[in-house]
Structure formats: C-alpha cells, structure tokens
Length: 212
Image: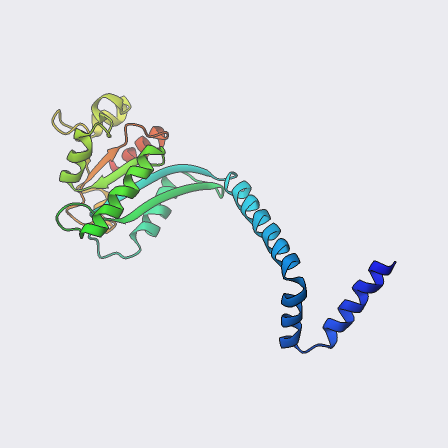
C-alpha cells in the first residue's frame, strides 16, 4: 500500500511540474530505470523485427553492375516488373541491388565498396542474377562464380536462348524488355546466373520472360 501511495505522489508531483523541470527530475532521479526501460524496448524491437522479417520469402536477388541508365528509379521499376513475372505475393521479396560500379569507370572507393558488397552477397548465397557489361561478366565467369547456362537451363528455354559455346555463361539481353523499356544502359547487356544461387528456378523464369 505504501508503494502505491508513493507512486501516486510521484505522479502528482510530475503533473504539477513544468515540462522542462519534469524532464530534469526524471533524468536526475530515474535515469537508471529509464535506461533499463529503453534497453528492454530496444531488445523487444530488435527481436520483433527479426521475427517479422522471417515471415518474408526472398524470391529473387539481382545485382546490376555498371549500369548508366538515365532512369534514376530503375531498381524500383525492375523490382515491380520482376514481382509481376514471378507472381509474387505480399510476403514475397525481390531484391535489386543497384549503384554498383567496377572497372576503369568507377572511382577507387566506389569500386572497392561495390566489390565488397558483391562478395558478401555471393558468399552468403544472397545473389541469384548478375546483370553487367561483358567484361565484368567474363571476370566472374573466369572465377567460376557463374553457372553454365548451356548445361543448366531447362530445354525449352535453352532452345530459344541466344547462347554460344563461347558465351554460355551469360545471356545477351539486347532487344529484350530490359533494354527497350529503359531499365539498363546499352553497355550493361549481359545477364548471368550465379553458380551458387539458391533460387535458380526463379532466375530461369526471369530469363524465360526475356525470350521471344
């Protein structure tokens, strides 16, 4: 009973104080409890966010490298188009990683950050498709990071895909909706599938949408 009365007195005291004095009083006499309270709230928030994120399913993850398109919102537009192609629901997620630049045209810091991000995505199996210029694709193909589309594509897709023995690790995307609708610049003309992609079926479905 005494605790309840003390709590009631404290509330009355706080109500009578000006806002500035109220904050000073709380911080001076209750900062430890406030810190504990805020810490508990932060932990609950992190756990709740983590649990909420597990309810989503990543359907496809794409990296676009060395794209100089004038469409500043191409990542959002491409995300929406892929959601339609893969018939995504509310809990399905498409990840489009843009703003990545490698090679001579990229600044040293930008190239380093882009290379680091790509490496992190690949090692964590968080990347399925890479769209880039032919030189960048060849670099990753030589490193064994890209799958052989001539061997792994479904037969119906392989017959319609413009692949050659020399370039079976990428699909030329000239003349496809990716280029014609302004998602990509003309030098960013190759699409490859990562060897360790955990969602190759979705990647092949994207390729199917690009074929006549």
